[in-house]
Length: 369
Image 1 (cartoon, rainbow, N blue to C red):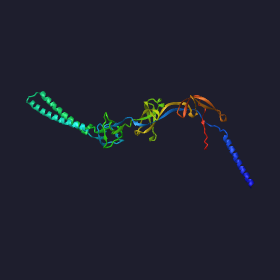
Image 2: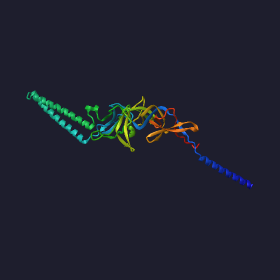
Image 3: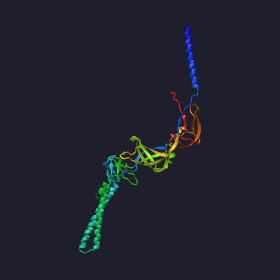
């Protein structure tokens, strides 16, 4: 038994040794290299670029008060449509004490002057009836009285404007009522009832009561790299895609290219704007992120091969034309003249025909299978 056991162990060791030798020998043998093969095709090639930006209304207006005061009423809210002249809010005036004192003083002086003018006129009128003064003096006295009356009215109007923000004479044009200056959709109302607001003037931008925009006239605003901006021209067509609306797409036309670059993340970028053509029923909100696709160059019905089949060597380009079949297959390195590339396929202007077959990249075997 011991003799047979030794023989079995020796046989197992021999089999392991032989198997290992065969495995290593097979691994050391050169593998056949297999390449992809392509036939040139006639097709259209387009070089495109994608620009990231956002959708904005072309005409967006900040509505600001003409007087300082406190918001007492808000008649609209964000999302409402308003026509030009519609009232958005009402402001209660907080008068400036210096202006209020001056206006009150003007009213008192006007009252004094009016009383004096009335007294003088009555005296002149009595004298004129007695033919003791001329008609010219009587007319001057009457004119002075009329001027005093008008001055009092003007002083009272001025006081009402300073104190209340409007006068009885021009109540319809009251500056306490904040009206929209354009027709459109209210994008934002950043104030609430009780907020203090400042009037717009040469020294202050004023408080924004509401932001109104025409949402039927939108533009796409984005930035393009300096390496591509030279290929843009005015009125180029674009495709706008809004990912937030299930890849909703619109046509647009390029209408503005900034003459000056701005630096962004270490690269020079040029701002562009494009007029968006809205489809019927399209509901777009201001500020949506969007992508614009622009065709920078195109070539129609040209011979092309996958760019992976091209060998680049300095300023020259080559392909390998397949000759023969099976074990007799060879590859002939041939110079070609290339044209437009879309990143996948490249135009071949000269060097091969549609009947040739060209070698592509090596097919890498999947060892996991």
